[in-house]
Amino acid sequence: MLMELELRHLRAICAIADAGSLSKAAVRLGVSQPALTMLLARVEDLVGGRLFVRDRSGARPTDLGETALRQARLLLADLDAFAADLATRPAGPRSPRIATAHLACLSKIVDALEKHFPAGDPTVQVEPSTLVLCNLLERSHADLAIICQLDNQELPLPADIPRRTIIPKFPFFIALSHDHPLASRPEIALEDLADERWICPPGADDGSLASLRAMCRKAGFTPKIRFHAPSGGASDLIAAGHAVRLVEPGSRSQACAIRPLKGDPSTGRLLLAWRRQAFPEEAIRALCHAIGAAYTTHAEETATYARWWRSHPEAHPWTA
Image (cartoon, rainbow, N blue to C red):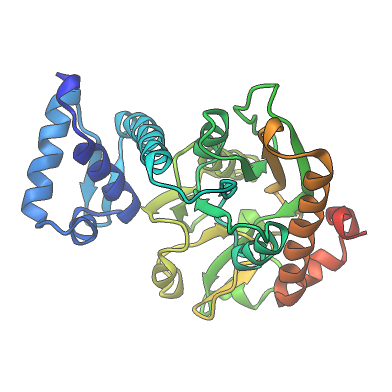
């Protein structure tokens, strides 16, 4: 019965998905691989189907697995926030709870947040899933969220939660091996990557994978998804030439070559969404400027991104 599922089951399947293999997930969970294999078999028996396809490249979620993972991540986010809310807090105003997408400029944004909230350090939860970020905000488990919205992606936020655009447009670049024949080019046409093996975008599939497939379809091919890895992971696979991956333009890696895609086939925008009762309008306006300035500083310090950034002044209005 589904009611027999336990928290450890949910955490286990999330760990397997994030790690990309049972052996790596077992290390993260501090259990043996045979024990984790038995636990996964128990969960699959309870839900009535396979959650992962396992082969030499690791473990990939099935369609049923993707559905289970989306629900598990939401439930675990709710429970973690519930536990945090019950924790003993010191007297005085509560520190702001901030949820944010996994950004290459995260450290600079945290610096900006700490300056903006000098009375109390904000708590920051980093989450690669747009769906989870919106859910945290809607269920009052976060006071504000910094969200990366892909073009043509609908945000699952109710109308009473305000939002404001910080960066109206940013591109996605491609990460590939320094030894790749295309790495010598200043920019790469998407259609030239048709024969490559791809690493799946990280996090729950709430738009990023669909966006990758859509842009590749427009370029005349279907991407060969071979690897699943957490955000910031699998750089060794890229460096060794096993795969390519879409990355933030501000990403920095000595191990991989990061190049713009010709014509910017995939773009997004950076938004701030917040609970209306938590912040006055002037505070939000100042916060948007602070986050925009932090993002701009990082962009201008990143050689590959700086060229694109400076040639697209419409992308950074908050520093005007």
